[in-house]
Amino acid sequence: MSSPTESVPGEVRRERIVALVSERDFVRVSDLSEAFGISEVTVRADLEVLDRRRAIRRIRGGAVPVGRRLRDELPFEQSLGTSALEKQLIGKAAADLVQSGESVILDVGTTTTFIARSLIAREELQDLVVLTNALNIALELEPAIPRFSVIVTGGTLRRLQHSLVDPMGRYLLQEANADTVFLGCNGVDTQHGVTNINAPEAEIKKRMLASASRRIVVADGSKIGQVELARVSSIAEVDLLITGPSADPSELDHLRRRGLEVMVVG
Image 1 (cartoon, one colour):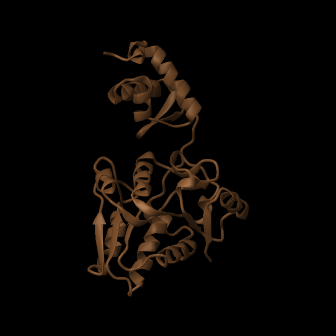
Image 2 (cartoon, one colour):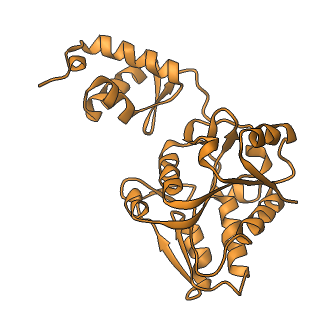
Image 3 (spheres, one colour):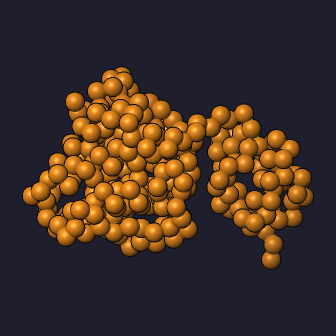
């Protein structure tokens, strides 16, 4: 039996989709499928029509308002040199929280790459299990084998970032029960929480948070107070934020008042 929304004429449905995208700023294909009781194939077809009309802007995973300006991702190698000293200090502070025998999830990113390097430098660390969705981090950790066991999630490779995302990327994480996750991001804001530039990586980050007992976000100061396209989590879903001295002190105070523990290094 078809649902009431399936009997809505296509043009009416598409008008409602435009209104919903404008209201929420970003809507996923799966959200629209559920909201209108239609298949994701039909949703994608509607979005293509609306994109051609310039009523919305079609992006990977969903749609945003046509006037929304999307910030381009920098290649990993270019980002690695930005705020490098601060990221190095954050990486060392994060690695110092890890003990032998633990299991750790390392998210993709430049700051988490510095965590990987700091973990390797701790020669006393033994029997560490590291699960990552970043090909570059897996290669960074290879010299630490057999002290470390390195597990790669699998999934679809994203260009520029060396990251693995869905499909397939989620399945290993669903079975994982790690001690700690170190999560990278593009924005940390009191109201909007942890956000990321692209939706596919945001979905994997959500699964990482759900797969670890201790949830730590690592972000250099430029990310604090920023809001990006794809929501990852609320502030309440994070146990600790490690950031650097370039972060706006007032923004950090707001985060602390919301109950988030904040560590500033450097």
